[in-house]
Length: 240
Length: 387
Ligand SMILES: Nc1ncnc2c1ncn2[C@@H]1O[C@H](COP(=O)(O)OP(=O)(O)OP(=O)(O)O)[C@@H](O)[C@H]1O
Ligand SMILES: [Mg+2]
Image (cartoon, rainbow over all chains, first blue to last red):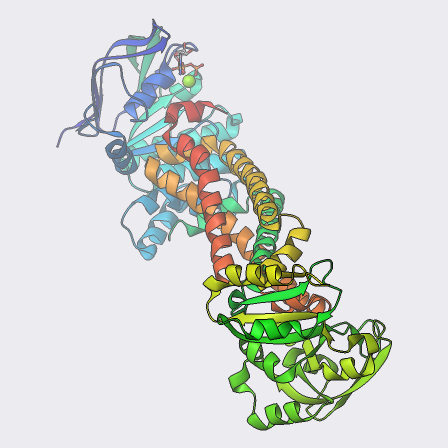
């Protein structure tokens, strides 16, 4: 099997305002190996979110090739793309984006409802994911009954419950205080190191980016440079 | 089915809004069900089984005037006439003016024949018919009327009429079960009692009801009769029973157009209310919908979930509305049926119920589809940005 998770060739994305083309990303060439942990950095408006959305298959490029988790995304129609996402991608958002009418357990179960799994099997997986984020005792709580940090941990459980190869996170610590942000980052790092998930993390925060193994810098829609992180914070062991 | 929890919880996320929408939906369904049933009841009344073959001959100037009974001689000679009977509205009160019901003096034998469907003649025991025809003080009453006052065959009923300044004491000889309740709210006795007791009734009747062999002959027959008496002391006016009933209804305005336009207006109003509720409910969930699609929900699945929600909402509304209407209808039939005879037949037919359910289903689908479709096709990235 291919050991490359994300392969982008000459990727471009433009928006059109009337007949005026507004390029947002141009000539992006990038390879992220399986199990890689990459932080996407750059000033506001440089195209980080746009690039992440393309990689995650929720947006379409204007040009170039896009191969993620062993699939060329260019040729897939919307429904095929949705199916592909449901099997290969886990999403973590800045504002958690939990479904307010579902409790923690049901939120984590949501991605599994798209798969052909029995109730018992779903339950087993949901409980496992919840135990990874240490929230089993809060699983009957609704999002409004959880703290921000807990909400984000539920979201992380939701992102891994269906065992995707790739996890994308857009400013996952943007709404959290320092302590909860640190906790979330440690969790992500464990997912990467112990479960082998490929992670692409968009962040402004150099401290958050320091958890990744590589930092990609975007500047006005072009890849500026990629740097390896050497002095990563030491991890306490969490997962087994 | 595994999404039922999600649909139900989403529907009741904003309890007050859902409650208010269900309430306004049910009030509308209730209104429409009642209006349509009222219409149906009136229609059934004006097109009763026998009424298509009958017409009424009465005084041209006013139906309250009496005409000579000898006019029947001319009718007897007309080959198209099957049978006729004579009637006189008595307006009698039983004990109390509040106990209003229709009562007539009639020619017993021909009356039973001319109104054989309404009285369900074959079902009346032969000895009751015989007793009624023999007893000059006998009368026949409908089952519903008898039940109302607790009358039994053999009871004596005193009726006091202020029109004739006369009290008659009648022996109940027949209690008949009609096809419809409204046909049972009537009492008929021998018109001879009136003609013998009241000087100006001698040889006179209020109206003649004629039964034609063939409904197609009625217009020709009416014209011939009225023409024949055109130069007599009292001119006649012959009209079909349907036309007679319809004329009564016309007094209430063009009721069917009215009912239909009210129903339509109610529908449009409720469509706007439901569409607004659903549009709001969907718009506030833009981020949630985009998130679910990012997780892998297909547009079609999102659309189905939202449509299920809209359908459920309208089904709840129509269910409650129909329950309400049924309750009110049976109460109305009980209470109003005692005052207005045809209200006794007031029921909500299965057709009306079906109509209401279909209308609300269509309403739910229609009001949900547009916002749901748009939400399900909206670019995911746009929805995620809209916070
Ligand atoms: N739908 C759109 N139509 C037009 N322009 C858009 C649209 N979406 C994004 N852009 C533009 O694309 C550029 C990149 O946006 P993007 O959201 O990727 O930036 P970002 O690097 O994530 O910024 P931030 O750090 O503020 O989140 C911006 O200039 C933005 O204005
Ligand atoms: Mg961004």
